[in-house]
Amino acid sequence: MKTYGILCFVLALFMILTPLLSLDYSSFSLSNVKSTFQKENDSKDEEKLLDEKSDSVKIKSAASGNVATASTKEYIIGCVAAEMPATYSTEALKAQAVCAYTNLVRLKKNPDSSLSGADISDDPGRHQGYYDIETQKEKWGDKYDEYRAKTEEAVTDVLGKTIVFNGEPIVAAYCAISPGRTESAENIWGGKIEYLVSVTSPGDKLSPDCIKEISLSADEVREYTKNDPEIVLGDDQSGWITDIVYTDSGSGVVKSLKVGGKSFTGNSFRALFSLRSPAFTLEQKDGAFFFKTYGYGHSVGMSQYGADYMAKQGSTYEEILAHYYPNTEII
Figure 1: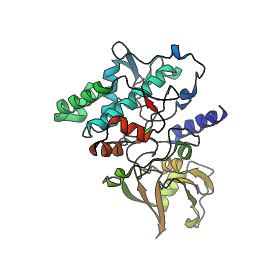
Figure 2: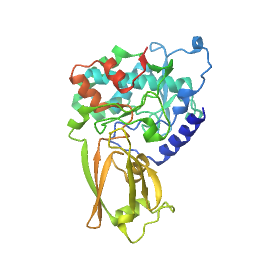
Figure 3: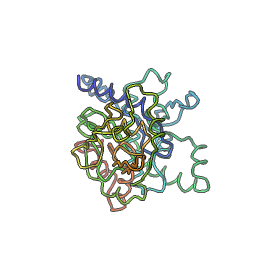
Figure 4: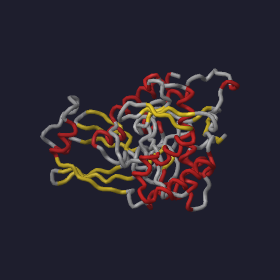
């Protein structure tokens, strides 16, 4: 349990540091990962999943602080609408729905007292996103009827399905696009989770948004780091960002590096500089810093683009989830 305690601390720090990216369908936070490992001695007879026919969900708005109530089905529809493009294949939408339901079950089993009686937040950087019907209409516009029907059908087909590991609902983390291979929770957040390991996701490399390039001037680097007194940037810019070490998974994710002498993980560096991914290369020339990023999001768990690619190749939602969360089962 000591390992999990360390993990919770690291994840809490990560949550504080990570800025929300409005177009990143991947920002589900593991801030409540501790709940996955709580109540280990509870009787299995007392552990009941949600009843989708009668249960309701209380959702706290991150923007207003108000708490809204929706049926379980309506909540999952709204979550899928917020977290995955409706243009994706139906089997990918089903996989996303199972992830959303699994995260809800886990959080309901272990209430968060900071939510003022709510079950979950609609903050994707803390729990997972949620769009009510009005927001769905705003997002989808004249495609609302089509996308709503498609999403509702996918959710209805899998409502109540839960991903479990050793009988417990998993932390169903996901990212928008992996670098072509997902990364382990251990390499990203510092604690081992048996089912959040590195797996192949070759379809991601076909995404037109997989590889992006940005450059930062020296002044911009100073601006990003000015509030951290532990970062000391000298006159020699070649010594500002150093000691880049990559993980051994082959994902291209940076495991660690230093900024002005201070150590960072690749993911905390990503948060500091608002990069799209912790998988990146860096070239310094002409007084500027040129980054090439691979993927979008933290790279842990199910790649949403990869899930859509697998679905287009004929994979079912069960096969998609089994691939991205190995050694788990769906009940």
